[in-house]
Image (cartoon, rainbow, N blue to C red; front, side, top):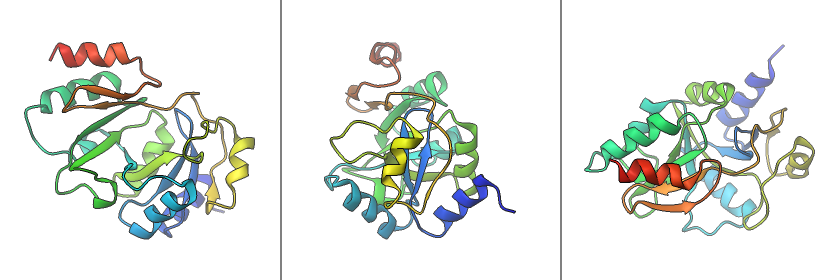
Length: 197
């Protein structure tokens, strides 16, 4: 009999959407290499097309391959070492290996999650998936399995469990040094590393 993990893995392999209780809040996952799956996420969430989905990566190396080399590479490495795996999304110039479905204005947002089972899922899918919060755009994040079940008609599967956090990830733009969203990681800690690099 297949495990819960295997059912969730097969859901994404088949091109369907998966709801997962991440280390921040409930997430909505899709294969970034399938434009139709990514488009379905935008449609369901009523998400503006100019707002890219982030990529959840299995590990530092999987994430690093998706960003371009540049003057900011040292900052990328220092932030990744300090806060990954964890609740920081780093927006950086995209490499040619980054899936175009998640690139906007030449940039890509990356995070390595703290949940080891989720990282195992990402590794099994080639190192990354497209991700966003499960809630509709503009609504509060989903924080419980019971609330996640309200979205059962959106997805192929809701992975059992509860999220480990109650706040979305903090988002930083590496090029501008701007905090785009304050969340699970205190903004002052991120800025301290940027200013010290």
